[in-house]
Image 1: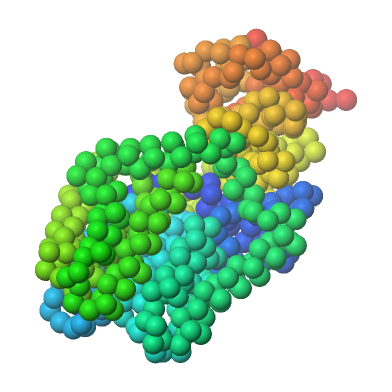
Image 2 (image 1 turned 90 degrees about the horizontal axis):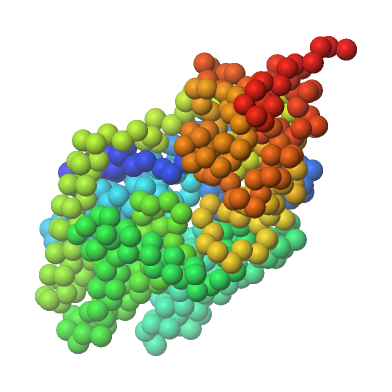
Length: 545
């Protein structure tokens, strides 16, 4: 009981301490969920046809089902992520306490409590949960999928195999990486199962997973006219070697940034596999069960490297490797021989202590931006800015890179996503360099030529961008940092100056900043938008005709 309370409180504290890179992806999922609920189809802009700019079908379906019961969709996403994050720690605790030769013994319960607390306090799962997406569900399902074989003899229980197969199918739907994990788990069960077990009992879960994936990809191809998700294309570089380098750098950077906690975290998936060849295992069953959790732990870390890591620091993509490694440590404690048992105890104890210290430091630093209080109320001024923008946009078309939530606030607008997550054409553009947030390029934005361009990620400022010369806005680092976030590539500066003018919309004692095409400038000025002349002056509003 005390262990459960500690894990519960630890999960809440770590969630409160975590700061997401942004919540735009959470808003993206809510947009797709609303479209599915209201229109029965998945799309971003209705006129662009079916599209899947979301990462997790399972997360989308859960949110779509619950949207009618919530007046605040963002708070709903927050509560779901926090709940799944808490359940992850409790599930790890329960699975370890129930496994081994003496389930429920003092050793099993103690190891379970330590496993659950270490996972609840660890910054990687908390960082993932703070994005209010599918990360916490992924951790929970990965734990249950790897943990059920530790507590059930699946070869002897038809009901247990059925439940496990259902969990594996859900794991396939929660994230693309879950598909590989589900196939690996089912394959290990088939290959490592005792020869005395009926062949259908060993291979049945693998057949279910493979059949489920075939059905999923057939549906995906028929619905979206593509085999792979749009987000895969938007986040993929043309250089596989470059992605491997970035994935390796992501893992190493996490280790360096978090000191001892980080290095133990990234090394543990390999360490928990080391006892597998040892002859000291008490029983073949104990060794087989450990393989079913330790090998997936290492495989999940390998997937992170292969996929190129993450744009945001903080370790959210290391959440599943961390969770499975901790579960493997718990199993070593309750079912392993003495030397591996000490490895399990040492890892659990050190990670619990180091994670607790990390959370205390994060709490003392009190960095702003925690998702624990996320609500649409936080976006009142943005929603008003979106309303004012929607009232004046020529043709209702806006292009942007960092204001995806605009689509949630004003669904009637056609919001072009220049990163490509929600745009089929942009997602498939070839890119040899690193893919950070997507495939945005100034040159392609100029070809799209939308009448309004929400340029950069600053969005708003205390002074109007309309009064800034375009040359300074595009070239001067100080000016660009204040209003945009980055300077423009020199090769597009003259084209941007030729086609666009700076503009601002007053809202909440600040200014929403944008670029407008020159042919629409007078019409927008007539509607009260502050439009600059591109040289630092103000474009006068023409007299009404």
